[in-house]
Image (cartoon, rainbow, N blue to C red; front, side, top):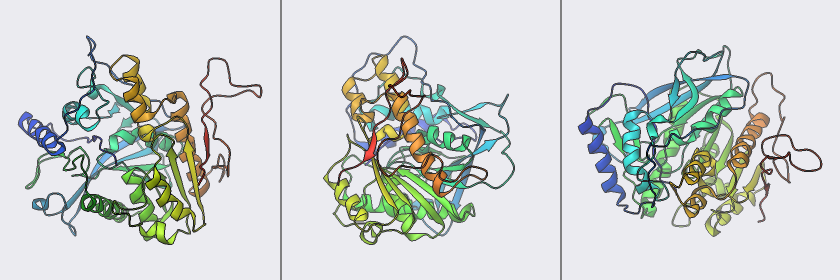
Length: 422
C-alpha cells in the first residue's frame, strides 16, 4: 500500500531537537535508502496546487481529537488514541485571510528529510515543501446552514495534506469535508504539543516490508478511527472517500456503520495480505460504493477482491483511468509533473507515481468523478440531485469545452474513464 508524508497545522513551533529526533526516528523505522537522482536548481522550486472549481471560497480549521476509550496500537505508552483532522467548509469570503499551507514549516522540515525515503521518485533537495499553499483560507467564516459532510482517509502511510486539493474542490461546491490523519501510520503528524509517549511531530512506524499482521492492524485501526470521527463530530448520514488503505477502510466502514450513506474507494484492496476477503467483499453492500482505479496499479489481487464485491450486485460501480498510476488520486497528480518538468524527477519516476496522463486531464477527471458520485447520493441543498452523475459506461470528460468535431485547440485530451473489464 501507500507510504507518504503528512500535514499537520497550528500550535507553537516545536524545538529543533524534537523535529530532528522525529525525522531520524521515522527514517530509522522506514529503513529506506533509495533516492531519486536529480540536480537541485539554484533556487528551491515552489510547487503549486490547482485551484478549486466551485462557486464558494473555502475556509479551513484544524482539530485535535482524543479517543480515551482506545489505546494507540502503534505507541501504547500514549495511553489514548489521538487524531488530527482538518475541516474544510464553504465560506462566504476568504478575502484578506491567509492561505493555509499544505505543510507547516515543521512538518515540511520532516517531510523534506523523509520524502526521498518514502517515495524514491521524489527529490532529496531542490523543493521548498513549506512554500506550497492550498486554496483554503484560515479563519474564513463558514456559510450558514447545514451541509452534507464527507470524510477522507488517505493512503497507508500517507498524510491528509496530500489529499487537500480534492477536499478543497469538494468544499468549494458546497460540502463540508473532513480530512483525517492516522498517526503512527502517516509518515509524520504534527500535534499541538508534546505528551507522554510521543513527541510533537510523530513519525511513521511502517516499514517497506509490510507484513500481514501490520496491515491488518493498520486497516482495523483506520476503521475504528473513522467511526470515532463520526462520533466525535456527531455526524450522521455522511459520505466517505479514501485512497489506497484509506479506500479499503472506508469501504469496510460503509459495511459496518449505518451512518455512512455512500463511499468512494480510490484503489484500495478489499482483502487482507493473507488473502482473506474483508466482510464488505464477502457479503456485499446495499449502499452506493464507487471503486475507482488506474491501469498502472491494477493487479490480480485488486481484481480478485473487487470482483468478489461486484459479484454480489447492488449499487456498486467500477471505473478505471487510463495512462495513470496509484497516486493520481492525490495532490501528487499535480505536483509530480512539476518536478519532472524541471528535472527533479525522471520520466520513469513520474510514471511510477501518477502515470503519463496530463494533469490537465487527471485532476479534473478525478474531481468530477468523486464530485458527481456524491452529487447523486449526498447532494448539497439547492443542487440538482444526480447532476453530473457517474455514467453506467463510457467516459467522463476532462476539463474544458470540447466541440463536437474534437477537442479545443491547445487543450488536453479528455480523460478516459471506462467500465473496467472483469
